[in-house]
Image (cartoon, rainbow, N blue to C red; front, side, top):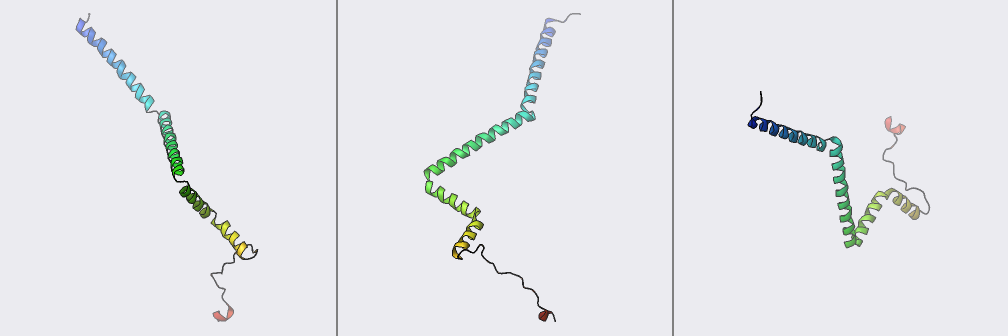
Length: 113
């Protein structure tokens, strides 16, 4: 039994569309693979980081004194303990540490009796 020309054309068209559908499914599978998604996320993060760095450089160029003050303040905050020790040595005539008062007192025998 032979197919009519219309049925044969419909079979060919159905096969062509099935092939296109499978190609689209393979393309989607590739796009949604974990490796491809991770690569895209990493590329986006690198671009965003580069943009932020460029903006920071532009900000420092436009206001160098303000940027210097901010960096100095952050540095002083991070180095506050060594700076306090150094100030104590200078002010105390060579003492190594600033003595801090003790917050708790020992109980004497007289107060317990």
